[in-house]
Image (cartoon, rainbow, N blue to C red; front, side, top):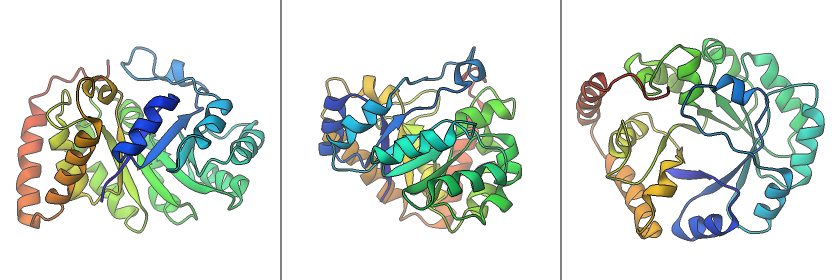
Length: 263
């Protein structure tokens, strides 16, 4: 079953999402150098707070993930405060090597689950060493990873088999990537094609992208979440031959997309 994660500090939306079958809520504290890094790109910057985390933990019964800032001189205090606010999972972004991951794991000290948001070229190049460390799960952040590789479209990375290689390296860890909206929507790459790749690579979870909040207007969110999960289950029953044929069709579709998605 594919687990869906929603970034939001909106209490009403979080309650609605939980009832609809969304599996996790993400509170996003990452601000360090983010605007500079993503300047000129059509990407989302959240401005959540530690109080948002506390309120969310008192609102929903599903796990609450907290994306912290990259490792820095204030990481110890930030991590302690996030754990004291009862985050179920801490997510580390923008690391480049095993040393930062080791420091993250040390600072968490087993008090919370640990999730790695792999989104730099250097982290991808150091993935084999990182995979040996004692974290709980890994998520591939395609937008920043594409920027790191000088790409204009996040899913260009699928054309180069980078995700296949990373999935092989992290074969023993829960794994996710990408962002999806409701079936029948999604641009420039439709959700149903992303789900094909999520299934082929045996992904355990996916982020609900910001377009979902707009696409869901006037629709039954419970039905739309159910459709996503049902489609993933159907895709998981494909033969390897069919999965590869579907991948071929997806790659053909992608090659015709203008490379202007992120900018």
